Amino acid sequence: MNPRITASTASKRAAGKTWHRRRWLCSLAMLACAAYSKAGSAQPEAMPADAPVLHLVTTEFAPYMGEKLPEQGVPVAIARAALASQGWRLQVAFRPWARALTELEAGQHDGVIGAWYQPERERVMDFAKPMGIDNQVGYFGLATQRNAAKNQLPADLAGLHIGTVQGYANPKAFEQAVQLGAKADPARDDLTNLRKLLAGRVDLVLIDKGVARYLINTELKGAAAQFVWMEPALERMPLHFAMAKSRPQHQALRELMDRGQEVIARNGELERIRLRWKDWL
Image (cartoon, rainbow, N blue to C red; front, side, top):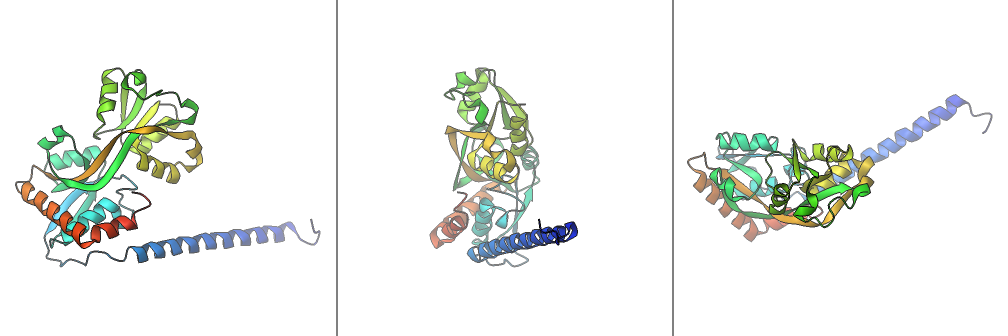
């Protein structure tokens, strides 16, 4: 060490390097935002203030839906564009999924964004056509327990505790596993389940592959190497818009959404939205 460089001087130089590094990271983030803004510049035109409004509810399901995501996620962007093509505006409320379903059934919203179809849900929901986004639903486990599910056959899961989310529809293969002795362990959301998996409170987590990867890379990055996806996915589950049957006009609203989706598929807007989100679809 150079004797003429004091500890104070070294400390100042280190602080300077840290400041420059932070400034560089901030600049990089700003460039990324600018690039996204440029790519996403083809947005639906602003609707008149007196345009009719469709009130839809959804949940935090990044990278697909999220209140703080650009455009609030691709399904929301599709809904907004489809409605704009019909002269309507969109208002979105974000709720935990179980609460979203309760409020939908109580008639507090016109419909929902991002529901998986199940026959029993038709009592409450009038399903629009699929939006063209499928979720790959399957199991995440820990790398240290790769053989926990063996071949993923329902009988292999007997006695295992598997994290699920309250209110989510589950693949038929999972429901069969529960009938054969697997234990469903419901939580409020997917992130809670992944944390329970790390803590050893569940053996596996039933989750969409894209959601799990997003949460691991953003919220649990330090533990990313500990997680493993178990191929193959149990089921591909298409996302739907669905209108609340508690609304007398639910059929007309569902037809409105179907027409809007057909329009943006024909005019290229749907493909432009998908291109903006190609890294996550």
